[in-house]
Image (cartoon, rainbow, N blue to C red; front, side, top):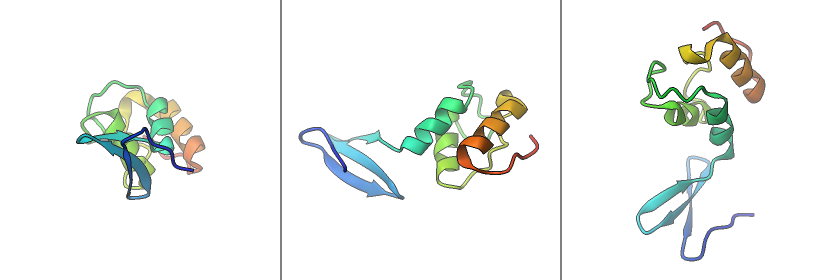
Length: 91
């Protein structure tokens, strides 16, 4: 069931639900949030994305590999593989 705050309009974008209100968008993609929680939050950009959250969102959409985060190391790749049900890849 989708719930939004009063005055919000639910919008489906690429399989995720977002609530729009007064020109702002709130992300409610639980998979991207779980992936982001595994990342080291260095916001370094070594993965090719500007920060950890955009990288997490790309992984949730299946557009980015799980082995692009050098600060997370092999432990990070293993955690992402377990979370996403994917094989472990070399960093």
